[in-house]
Amino acid sequence: MKKMILITVFLIGLLSFSTFAEARSIRVKGYYKPSTGTYVSPHYRTSPNRYKFDNYSTQGNYNPYTGRKGYVNPYRW
Image (cartoon, rainbow, N blue to C red; front, side):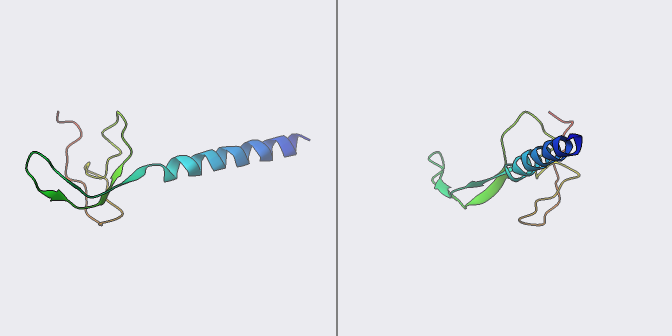
């Protein structure tokens, strides 16, 4: 019985982690900037949150869609 409970808890944890990991990127549709009238192409970005260290553009990270390395210093405001 204990093994069954442990396996169930492990599977629930694994499923919740995989859902969290997939929710980290958001597709942004293309749009026109009203202030300048320029078109911004569709792209992907990280989910909005209060952390600077998990963004694609932060140093130490890379964008899996473009392959570019991060360039923004997370310690600089």
